[in-house]
Amino acid sequence: MTDPPPPSGRGLARNRHHLVRLALLTLGWSMLAIGLVGGLLPFIQGWPFGVAGAVILYVESRWFQRKIRRWRQRHPRVERVWLKLRSWRHGRKKPRPSGPRPAPPPDDAG
Picture 1 (cartoon, rainbow, N blue to C red):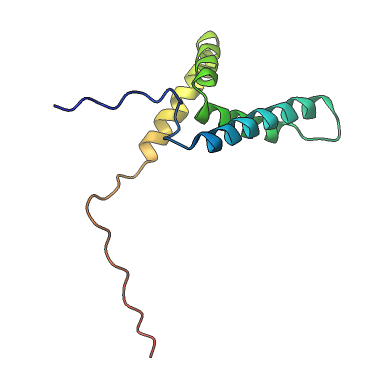
Picture 2: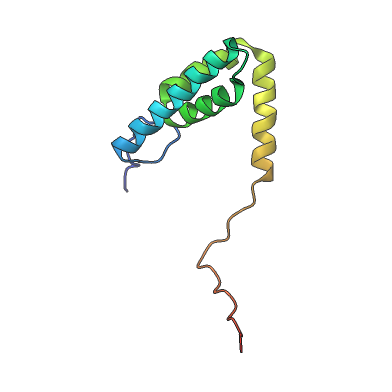
C-alpha cells in the first residue's frame, strides 16, 4: 500500500512555487492592511480590499485559517451561517465527468 503524501503545511493551496506563495501572502496582507486603513479614511472604500485580502490569506495560510476557525467557534451565529453557506455550496457542485473529454464538433466552414 502507498502512504498518502505528507501535508504540505500550506492551507488550502496546492503546491506552488515559493516565490508565488510569497507574492500571494504579501498581496493578501497588503490588501488586508489597505482595507483596515480604508475603514478609517472616508475617501477609500476599505471593505472590498479587506475581503479580498482575507480570502487570499484564507486560501494560502494555515495560521489564518486557524484564527478564522477559532473566531467562528466563539461566535455561534457566524458558525451557523458559515455551515449553511458551505452546505449550499457543496449541494450546488456538479459532479465532473470521468474519462476523456469529447472532441469539439468539426468546423464546417466551406
